[in-house]
Length: 230
Image (cartoon, rainbow, N blue to C red; front, side, top):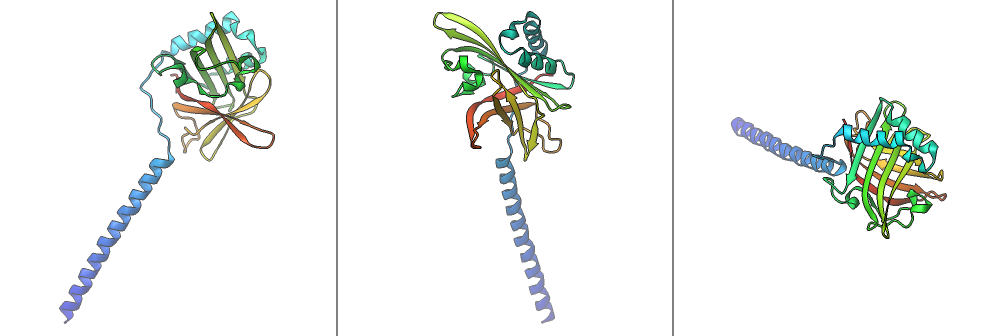
C-alpha cells in the first residue's frame, strides 16, 4: 500500500510539472506576441552618401537661397546643422526610397505655409527632407526642399521649421514642437525611440499633428521613413 501511495504521489507530481510547463509556455507565447505588437521595428537597407547631403546643405547655406522665407528659421536650422551634437536624418524622392509620396505622405499641406496650399501630389516633382535633432540641447529643426511643377513652370521652394523649446519623450513618444514661417506651432511625433536611453533610433518615422485651441489633435500626415546620416 505504501508503494502504491508513493507511485500515486509520484505520478501526480509529474502531472503537475507537465501542466505547469505547458502553462508557462503559453504565458511566454502571449508575452512574445504582445511584445511583437507593441513595438515598432523600422529598418532600411538604403545608405545615402553623407558628404553629398552635407554638400547640398552647404550650397543652400552659402548661396543664401534659403533666405526666401524667415531668416530666423533658416539661421536656426543651419546653426543646429553645424552643432556637433546634432543628428541628421534624411529622405528624398523619387529614388531608392520610392516616389515623392513615399517620402512626403500628407493629405493636408497647410503646415507648409499659406502660399503652399495649392500643393497636390501631382505638382510635387521632387522632395528632399532633412530633420535635425540635438541630443544635448534637445532642439530640433526641419527643412523641406521641393521642386514643384506649376503649369509650365518648375519652381523650387524651401521651407524651414524650428523649435524654441526642447523636445519631450513621454511613454515612448518623441515630440518636437516646431514653428513654421507664420509662427504657428506643429507637433512632430515619433515612436521610434530606444526605451533604455530615450534616444531616437537610426531609422524613424515622423507624424505631424496640430493641436487646436480646444485641445483636439489634428493629423496631417507623415514622413514615413527618415534615415540617419553617419
